Structures are given as C-alpha cells and as structure tokens.
Image (tube, rainbow, N blue to C red; front, top):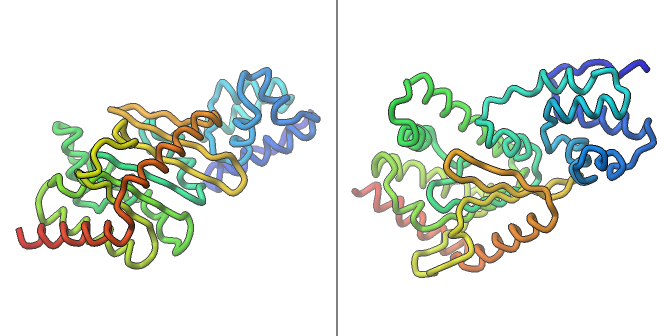
Length: 276
C-alpha cells in the first residue's frame, strides 16, 4: 500500500509522526489497546506516541510498520528523529517537557534546570565534569538554557517548583552567582510566571527525600512522571506509578512553606549573598 509521505524532521517532527500513527492505526481499524497488545505496550503508551509526548524508538517503529503495513515509513522517520541534544536518560523527558501544559518539579539538591542562570548552570556542569573541555561545557550550558525558553510564553506551561532549603543554602560557585540566580527565580515568582515553594530544614523528614521528581500533564495525553539519579533517569507512564508520584509531590508541597513565605526566604537568602 502507498505509505504517507516522509516527514520533515525540522517541523514539529514528533507531533507529525504521532498524527501519522493515528491515521495509520485508524485506517487499520485498530484501537490504541489493540495496536499496543502485539507490541507489549499499553494503549496509553500508543496514545502518548500519537500525541507526541513519547519518543518513538527505531525497533518499535519497525514493528509498527509491519503491523500497519506502512512500507517502512515510521522506521525511516523515526531514525531521522532519533538524534537528541540531551543525554540519553533525559531525552524522552525533555521531549515531554516541551509539550506539557503543567510541569511540577521537585528539586532536592540544585535549582531546577528550567530556572538556572548561565553562570549557575556552568558551575553545576563543571562540578559534574571537572576534566571536560570548555567546548563540551559550553554546549551543555547552551542546551540547558534553551530549555528555559519554555518560559517565554507568559502563561504556558504552568510551572510549579518545590525545592529543599539546601538548594538555596548551598553555595554553587560563589555568593555572587547565588545572588544572581536567586534574584532570577524571585523575578519569575513576582511576575507570576511560576509558583515556587521551599521545604525548610525544620520540616524534618518528608516525601521528597528519595530524590528529584518531575510530573508533566498534557491536554490530550495521560500524565507522565520522571525520576533521576546519578547519570540515570526514567520516564513513567504506568497509571499506578504516576499516581504514586503525584501523591509524593502533593505530600512534598504539604511539607513546604506557603508561596509567600517561600518567596521571603529566597529573597532573604539572595540579600545575604549580595552582602557576603
């Protein structure tokens, strides 16, 4: 059968590939669950591929071509889209983040990537990779700052960040870098672009102590969650796991200071760094 025409990877490639998957599935008369069954994935996963919130991997694309009789279309285009400027463990999460309408981010150790300034990000990457060349560090910083362009829209996505007090007390690079970065965060809060809360030290043990957690919600796809460790990360779509992560995030916010008190703490810390 004649397949759909190849996509131009430069124009919303995942969304276009997902739209073509939906067309091919409907043409084959299959539901999302029916297509997912022989692939050993859920119907929800197929829905996320169609919505463009999940990256299509080459082996899965090859199987889709066989089941849907699409003459290698998905494998060809998936291979063209496989390259990512992000580390392998974060690539899918970065794709999903760019399409989310609501992002809830808990950071236990460093300021969330979407809120980092250039000097702060550079110091973090240099700490991670002390022997890397300047070119490598520069590229990492450039990629991280490009993610923050999500905030250029005045309303979408809604970004709700919660971070441990250790994030604002640990001096990354210098007091000047900390002051500049915390002022950047408070400017976003005061402009009503983000919601931010701090879990104070005196909150004691809390649900966020297991590590970084990101929850991403979409208009036309199920919620995803993402956790990260040392050079590792995993994106979850299983409803039970995502629901548990959402509960963990809610428990963290319950342990955090209210937004107004959190803003006061961050501004106080920034002032202390400025006078250091």
